[in-house]
Amino acid sequence: QVQLVESGGGLVQPGGSLRLSCAASGSAFSIKTMGWYRQVPGKQRELVAVTNSDGIKNFADSVKGRFAISRDNAKNMVHLQMNSLKPEDTAVYYCYAYIYTNHYWGQGTQVTVSS
Image 1 (cartoon, rainbow, N blue to C red):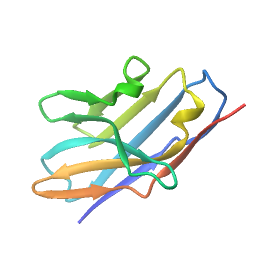
Image 2 (cartoon, helix red, strand yellow; image 1 turned 135 degrees about the vertical axis):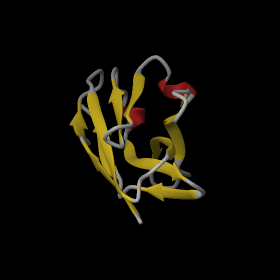
Image 3 (spheres, one colour; image 1 turned 120 degrees about the vertical axis):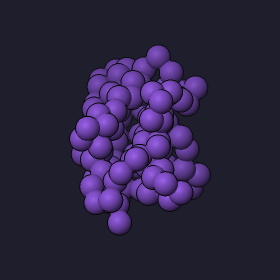
């Protein structure tokens, strides 16, 4: 079994920055893809940014140029650096991992962008 544990959410003013981290533990071998999704009440969960084992990264158009994703394969961790945050970035952010043929999700961390 694999567990994903997120950290780093919170309240930030518009234009500010936050860094989210996610650590995978358990049988977390050969993680093909790790990344982040987000969800607001009443809407579907949406991709924010993911990176695969080849280093290829994919970003939502709404965060390109503002967010960066990085991965530490030795520690089975993924980080999301969020800059120039906007109120519309407010959501619960979920860590995601695709390992072998299974999908895993973290418990979610709240990010609130408000003055």
